Image 1 (spheres, helix red, strand yellow):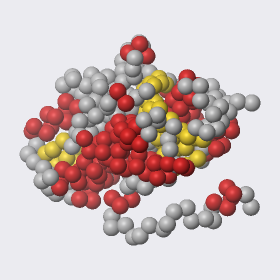
Image 2 (cartoon, rainbow, N blue to C red):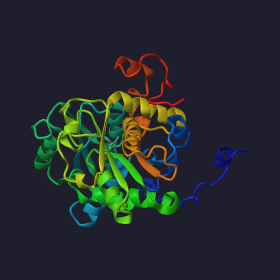
Image 3 (cartoon, rainbow, N blue to C red):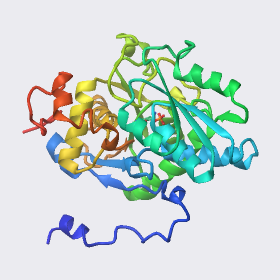
Length: 357
Ligand code: PMP
């Protein structure tokens, strides 16, 4: 029996005790070696994916939802029965709605139209009320998901915005949680290159702070979709703000929790390559991820080439795989959607994003 086949029969981690609630099923996600992709993509480095899509609510944002909510409760700013309002691209909404359901809060989510029906349906079932806002509304226009949330908060008594864009717990959740776990998981406790897409920037800021404190030589790579303006230098964003299809990363403003001084290298990614890379991650490694995970893979390869590290077998690279393909079953997971949007030429589900002979 090969080592890999044997894995199925091994206990990978101590069996956890009975959970008091689903909140205990957030965090402690697996770190998976992507050795099949290493071979397929001709990468000598050790590639690892942090499987945030295996959190209870299906994304990296569960971590901040539980931390922001419990901290607001602990400090007496909210109590069960209050209304939580949050502007989000969906995953923070799912995390907050899940925690709100368990702890007894009313939950209102404001979310741009672009975000998938799958996210809306999950939110509804979790008991959240949903307000859709125009995707093209600039962040400071009165119609944006951020402005609408503020307006509702002013109108509804005992309502509160946890505010993932400015809440320091968004950073701490990743400093203590995501990055702390990664340092425990990687061989020799060392990360040489860390790659994450930025939405609010909580993941990359919290992790970068932790990794740089641990080892200042860790290279931090930020991934920003074409159509967003988070990347630096500004010349990388010369396409300007325009709509794009990958969900959860990129913005038309710089969120307060995003500390761009920690990022050593920014990489821009297109919709097409991100979706093809996500499909390659699913087909090659069996990891059921969403589109921003594909962007992270594209960003990883591009950064390794720019840093001239692709053939270095001693280099440990960790990328964040933020959410699950469950959110996109009617979108990039479907061949018909890929073809309709010009991202796939023909029905060839295994068309690789980048392959080496
Ligand atoms: N990918 C997806 C699918 C997301 O929903 C988010 C959160 N918006 C991110 C990546 C980026 O995470 P962060 O907000 O921590 O930058």
